[in-house]
Image 1 (cartoon, rainbow, N blue to C red):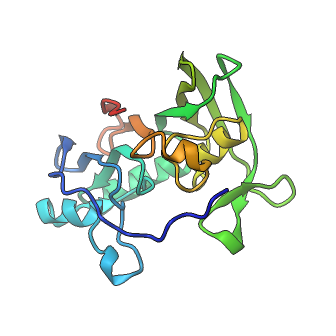
Image 2: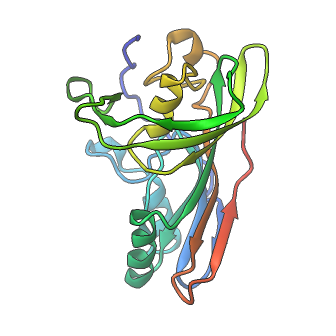
Length: 220
């Protein structure tokens, strides 16, 4: 696998894309290339949380998307909402659907990827499959479309490990287009962005418990 290029952070300057808002929640559509939270280095201050707080100072990140992953992300406007929704993610009471465009023609129409993952410490933040020491990780998938060189997947993560969807599809033999962490060079070059998008998220509203859902159009 070719080495990842030096980290040159140039986040997109799109305006904050608000999908839904009430007194407790701020739901946004994060663009690819923008960090969810600030990085450790001084130049990595610009992120989704910072931009949201310019609009609503009380907004706090509940969950994250990888920098290069786009799609639905929920922020809480108060501590009670943050705690309530955070527990939903922890207890797997949310429903999430991602879409990916990956290299190769998928063999099966649907299936379950059940491969434990752990950090590859010498090469962090990369993750690897490790049956001895990895943490349990499962992803259901459904193939939506096959083309000559690619397959389009809907992905239903059961667990939420770091880089889970990227590594699971890679293990299936289908690296995601534009993935400069895990894909070979020719697959990286097949797209100018990571073709992974959080297109649907369903939660219980922190007030009253009503089941509510949010969607985002897939941009690739």
